[in-house]
Length: 234
Image (cartoon, rainbow, N blue to C red; front, side, top):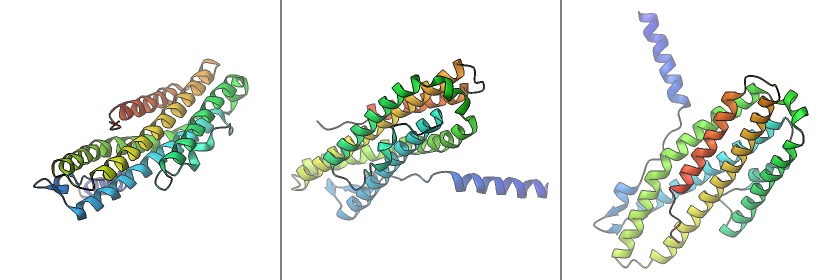
């Protein structure tokens, strides 16, 4: 019994170490008596940067997923260079559009190379990308809703108080949300492209890939769902 408890405890500690820590929300402390507290606002801005980094990670993983679904590097990898935390909105848009175009090119090229791909797709390699991508997507979705709610509360409080920061902060939040939506669009496109590559390989005779293509499709669906929840304040 004592050995069992020790093993169980170690397993629990291992699981906790691997689980992503949620960002949390500054929303409860951000607004006090219809006043946006400056120190809490800085915490929230930090959370926005962290969520943008998560979106960037999803793009990079989806890029890797496409490459592993073909067994070679097609013209996909624009997303890896799109650092959403540091680029401005116009540069981010240009970069992300390039990534989406690259994914479309990859899909077209992949259709012409199914025969070779059948021998190259590795289920194990795909799992090594799908698992962290599932974790990253779950963390992103968990953190997204409370952050959006905190932003809405912040803007409502600023508007009610005629806060001079309102216009600039609203524009900043709108740009941030647009970058998230663009990142999710790239993630969806690339995950869907990977799913079609894997499905084609499966139909051409490579077995054991059902989980991989369904999981890739589910990740694309999750990206669509997360994107739909974001109000762009237009």
